[in-house]
Length: 99
Image (tube, rainbow, N blue to C red; front, side, top):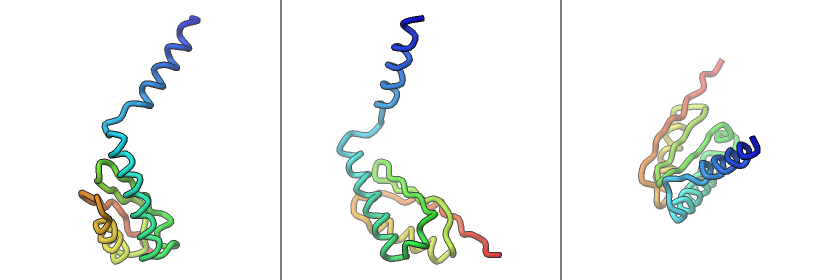
């Protein structure tokens, strides 16, 4: 019983450290995410992108969440594509229906 807790702790640490990306790729993805967020906020407007989630993995940017119109959805994808080091954009944004 006394070895169970240390074993579980070790397994959780090893699981948390496991990644398919190199440290350089992780840094690039953080940079890409920050640039996409900044450009979306400045070009589309901060209020339009508050419900948008941006994730970058190996240069692939995934956009998800809700936007006000199909135009905003399309523009968000174009903005993400324009960021350096972006390999591909997966646009999972949903257009919110207005009452």
